[in-house]
Length: 482
Figure 1 (cartoon, rainbow, N blue to C red):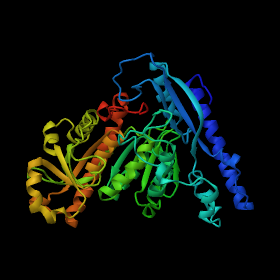
Figure 2: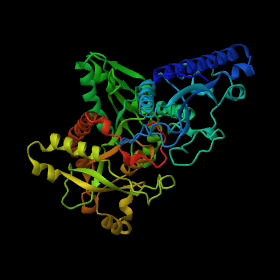
Figure 3: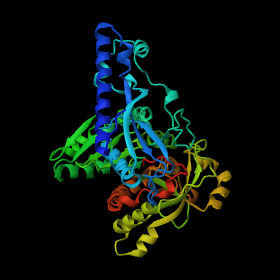
Figure 4: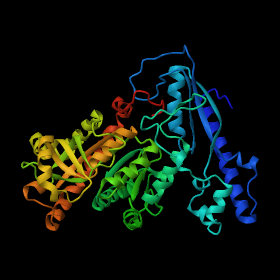
């Protein structure tokens, strides 16, 4: 075990140990593919994640802090296995700097007992070199993913008892993170490392096209170093005069939830993911994106309006959620409230004022409603309207969709600040059902402004990011890392 004196030294050591482990594993796999010689026990002992530990001594400093992370609740040791430390370097330093400064915490780095699955270190090109080697042979001689070691026990508040008494330092450990990194790439078609910390979700391709036009213009005419990452590993760099055409031609149809990332040199750009229709996709992608610890995610899809005074093209800012999608009932029981995050609600309303209202406050009042959004898993919920009508009325719901409740509940569960701003595309309870002609007029007139509200919200949140991570998301016995 090494005893670094500063967070920088600790992260440097994590990077060295991780690089050594990955190098040893990939070299051994290559040798096996060429010669059939498996790793020796001594060689296999190198295929392990590094582990970061933080020790908070009894009798140490006990600061009173108002932030939602960077707190050590109990004296003792906290630890977590680490993957991709070079990518997470800034995040790790931010977390460790707080603990060392506020608690005089001591740091240590060691090789853990957790092996790195071989499939987690092979990219698509590397994996192709082993297509002729049976997977069962590789799994016999090299570490393979084990679902018993990948889970969300810490996230869901289950007490994890270790023989050494060490407490979890972070919500996710290395195997869980690596599992999700691979899934992000599989579902979105773009490198996981291109995901930006400000995430927009939408449920229709037309929002993507509007985002692509905006992002391509930013790349074409914006500062040097900006880039647009698209599905199919299409990367468009700053100054490219054909940025929009290349982005729109990216092979997004090959992927279940295509993602586009406007990258900036300081890794503070915006990601848009088209999650499609339904709460299942919403849960799937948020389960994985959460391991990257984004600053927030926002839903900017469309919905059905439930009030007579609403008009197609009006906006709904969700303050509460009626969860009828059933997708997370086993993880987050229905009796647990999902609170609105004040900082995001304020930013969404300010952005809507700037884009829609301008100087006309009455126009904003006419076009923006706040209230409860109900989410169903069944797209044809209208066929059961007679049975649902009383519940909708009692809940005072103002809009209905399929994804918003899941996005918000996952944000609450996974400690990622969240918000929902929807645009009304039909009014099923008042005879204005979604028909092709009506939908086309809605799309043509509303999507551009709706997307701009989402982007303006992110710009506002960036100015106040230190207060964004709300204490509403903090559990009683929360791991120290955000």
